[in-house]
Image (cartoon, rainbow, N blue to C red; front, side, top):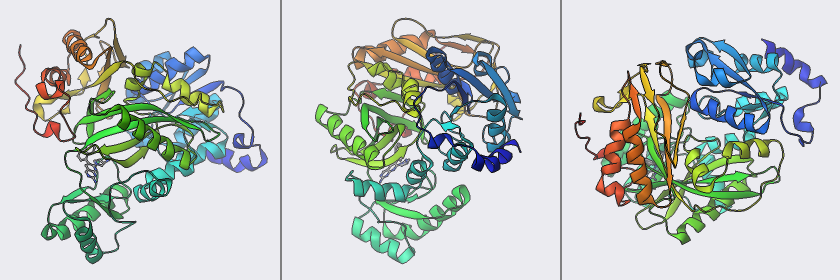
Length: 472
Ligand code: MV4
C-alpha cells in the first residue's frame, strides 16, 4: 500500500528523472536473490555504496542477506509474493530510503512496468529505460527496429502473421525449413520448426496456443530456420549520452533445452574480422535505440559464418562474469556508473585471455537434469590461480526448491583455450559438493570431450552428447 500513496504524492515532488544525475548513489536496493544479489553487494561495498537486500522467508540464511548492510523480509517463499511483487519491493524501498535499485537477472529485471514504477517513485532503476525494455521485449518490434538500424536479421515475415493462408505463402517465399516464433517469447518458448508445408497448420495452431498460454499474446512470426547455428552474443555498454561500446563476445552454444550450461570467451568459431563486424553491429543496435546501460545483443551464426540478430537482453546476464575475466573489468560497477550519469570510455574491448564458465546447478544429470534441492552437507569450492567461484551457498546451506537451481558459477581463466579447459578440468575435480546432486559430473565429461576440445559444437551439441556412468 505504501507505494500507491507515494505515487499519488509524487506529483507534488520533484522526480529524480527531472534532475541531472551527477552524483553517485548512496544506497542501492537489490531486488533479487542468490549469487547475483551477492555479486552486486560486493561491488557496492567496493564503491562505498550502502546496500539493502530483500529476501523471502526461504532465503533467510542466504549470504546475500548476511552481507548486505540492511535486509528486509518481503514475503513467503513463492516468487509471486516476494521477488516478483512490485508493491512489496517498493515498500522495502520506502522504509530503507534507497536511492537506486538493481534488478539483477530474471524476476523483474526486464519488466518495463516495474522500471516505470521506479521512475514514478523517484528511485533510479539501474538498467535501460522502460521504453527500451519494451521495444526489445516484443520480438517483432525488436526485429523491425534492427532492420531500420541496418543490423542483419534472419530472413522472414515482416511483422505478425495474419492467418494460416498468408503464413503458408510466406513459407513458400522463404523456403523450408522455417521456424515459428512468438513475438512475446524468447528463450525458446512457443517455438516450432516446420520442415514441409504439410506440417505447417499443426505447428501454427500449437505455436499460437503455447504463446497464448505462456504470454497471453498469441502473436506469431516466421523465420528461415538456421540449421546447426552457434549462439554468440556481444556484450555492450552504453551511457546516457547515447554512446555505446562493445566488450566482445561470449559463445553460449552449449545449452540444454534453452538452459545455458557453459559459456566462454572468445568464441573458438570467430575470426578477428567476424568479431569486429559483430561488435560493430551490436554497437549499431544499441546506439540506434539510444540504449542506456549494459546489455547483450544475441546473434545466431550459421556454418558459413553469416550472423543474424536474434534478441537483445536488456539486463546483466548470468554469464557476464566470463566477459569480466577476459577484459578485466567489473561490469556491475560499469552499470552503476552509467546509471549515475557517468560517461563510458568509448573504447571497444577485445579479449586477450580465455575464460570458460560452468554453471553448477543443483540437478541430477543422470535423472534428466531434474532439480535436486536439499541441504548441502559439505562444500569445498575449487581454488587456485585463474579460478573464480561466484556463489551464495556454503556447507550447511539448505537449497530451497522454489527458485532457479543454479548454486554456483565456476569460471576459469588462462592464456589459451587449451590451458583454460585443463584448468577447468582440474578445478572441477577439486570442487566438492555433498548432500545434493550437481552438474559437476556433466562438466567433467564435457571438458574431456574431443569435439568440445576442438571447438566443434553448435546449439544442438548436447542433443547427442552421451553422458557416461560416473566413475567412483
Ligand atoms: C532460431 C534457430 C534457428 N533459426 N531461429 C532458441 C531460443 C530463441 N532465443 C531463439 N532460438 C533459436 N532461434 C532461427 N531462425 C534456433 C534457435 C535455437 C537455439 C538458439 C540459441 C541457442 C540454443 C538454441 C537451441 C535450439 C534452437
